[in-house]
Image 1 (cartoon, protein in one colour):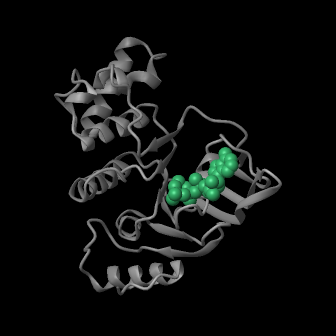
Image 2: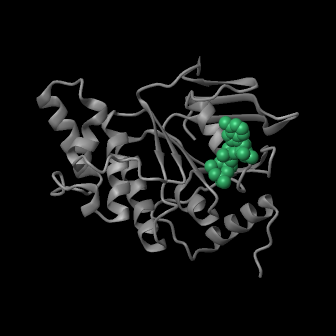
Length: 252
Ligand SMILES: Nc1ncnc2c1ncn2[C@@H]1O[C@H](COP(=O)(O)OP(=O)(O)OP(=O)(O)O)[C@@H](O)[C@H]1O
Ligand SMILES: [Mg+2]
């Protein structure tokens, strides 16, 4: 983990009002994420992972506690902190180029072109600049989303199960591509998943959440170099540790 803290959650709890009662979704989350770190948030459905991203992204306020980025409390959204979701958020009526350039229209044309071409090349879509989303595969559409996020030179990227809709082989490719991109640009990444393997393949640290109300059940380091050997003993041991924290047995 890097020594500079980028994101800090302190005593974060979230309760949503619900008819005559209330629904506690997150309980007392304390977590520090280093600058340039890749952290996966792993937990069962409904444990509050998306809610936590919405809070750090400035879309929701915590009921108690606080979140800071670079030491400043998050109170609103920020143009350099971007989300990448599972659903294709790209505009079907706009070309790859126009989709990717959305967040950088304020730049002078020549600079805009340099930035847009740079991120299109980085995600491996060179040659598809004029293509429309309907002409692209699911994996390529997700690359457009990633390129659009990267175009604004984000310092933090929030990814909420971004590869969940892809087939398993494309998902593997996208994971290794994401690692390559992360190593090139080194943004801080908070990546939500319920997939244990995905978490081990991507993260430097995996934060495991309990079922609702989401609490941190444990934090597991993944001290493996990329590319990671998915058949190694080390990988298997980390997987066992994560399943234990999730309270799931691995045999069926
Ligand atoms: N704006 C809201 N108002 C009321 N309840 C909400 C709101 N947002 C989320 N919830 C509730 O909070 C709980 C946690 O939701 P959240 O989407 O954060 O879970 P999650 O861990 O991301 O789940 P999944 O893995 O299925 O995406 C759910 O029970 C959900 O119904
Ligand atoms: Mg979610």
